[in-house]
Image (cartoon, rainbow, N blue to C red):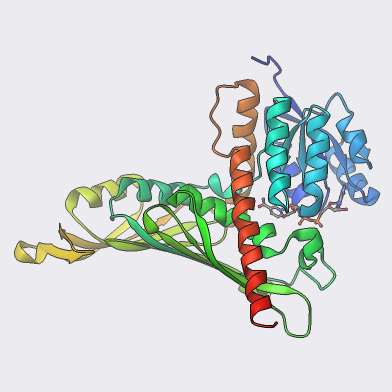
Length: 378
Ligand SMILES: NC(=O)c1ccc[n+]([C@@H]2O[C@H](COP(=O)([O-])OP(=O)(O)OC[C@H]3O[C@@H](n4cnc5c(N)ncnc54)[C@H](O)[C@@H]3O)[C@@H](O)[C@H]2O)c1
């Protein structure tokens, strides 16, 4: 076991998300910000001054530092593979921003290199460290409202901070929306419903530009559960909104926000199931909309018969606000990964394989969508 009490963190990529994470990491007991690096010197200097650490400009100089144990790579997606590979080869642990890579062979090579070097290289899948996504997972696994049938995620995202020259629109740099952004949700739905396979995908380009601003796809999970994802980046900031809607055999649930804050559930259940749901969502508001007695307790669905005693509506808040939950997710993911460094037996929620699997789904969806556009002559 490594006896080190604190781990030196080197941030590579001092843009908006790198700064957000470093602020959170600077408050963690097991981490010590050691240095920051950015190809754009002013960006590195700004964070160096703010956090009282040295700035370097070349990635190799960050990887050469003895006081850096973990490199957080927060640069645009296309650079993740070469930078993470070089960091691992320099003997560093890596926390990579999504996506792990923009190509599947690159993602696989990173997983192999991390294993060869005995280092970690997970992706910052913050949604796996969120009370609402945890509650959804517990509800799915409990079977209290039956088996899941279908999931739908609608991401009506803002583009106010994404001007025409932003790297986000350049698919050579970002990989496109499936790879740059949807990886979070390929990962989350695989976590909820088991491994998924992309069965359909489509993308749309903004009229009068080359920017692909809307993508959608369907994945098929264990036992034929289907998931539809829509991601569109075309809304004003103040209308930015997201919603998960999951259908089960005996009800459905909604989780709002891309960093979900609250959950609403509507279901028909028996008394034990109602009590079980209250346990999974402690402190939830539960309203009994109808009670059933005698023959009214019987109902059928999917050719099965159930006995239920009530129709309920449950509303549960998972936390204070999006920003706090986001920061908690960033902190908890890092704590989980650092625990693995201190104890090789520690089982992490997010592993290298999760990053690779999300890239596999994303590149499949992107290729399928490209085929579709070619076929329709666009
Ligand atoms: N996990 C999450 O929830 C989450 C949220 C937002 C962004 N991200 C990811 O974080 C990454 C960065 O996003 P951002 O919004 O902060 O971008 P950004 O453009 O604000 O910052 C990127 C920074 O990287 C620097 N950079 C670019 N190429 C470099 C290179 N080769 N070497 C060193 N520095 C380089 C740029 O100068 C810039 O300062 C992306 O991969 C994005 O997908 C993740």
